[in-house]
Length: 166
Image 1 (cartoon, helix red, strand yellow):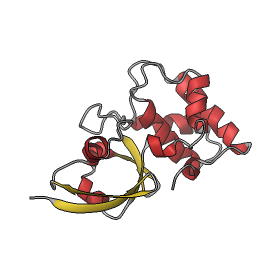
Image 2 (cartoon, rainbow, N blue to C red; image 1 turned 135 degrees about the vertical axis):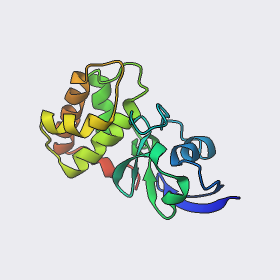
Image 3 (tube, rainbow, N blue to C red; image 1 turned 60 degrees about the horizontal axis):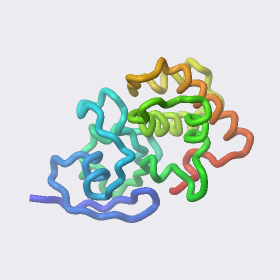
């Protein structure tokens, strides 16, 4: 038995027939081939699967695909502008906010959500926003520095997090 779902993913209308128990992360990765959304733990502990659903950061391993019916989902691929990098992606590169890169898409999606709500967060606010995301490679200092740098760049006039692809 399957259910039909229709949703907007990275600005494009998408449809699929899914089993009721299929997770959003599985739909994104397996059906829509958006593999930037990673599966790290299957228990919503690590945050590697974080995407935006209707503009809010959501762990896609804790949401059923059928719950995404009628929503707008943005993945790391949709956050990236057609030319170059999103300011968060650029800052993660420049400030060495990544090592293996596995957690990076989820970290960036959480950071984009934070910066949409708070354009000038303190280090404490950044660390609080990242509490649901685990990086097994770094000590988080460079991740915090990257988010702070992206906030500064964005305030100076770069594209806002939600502006890449609606």
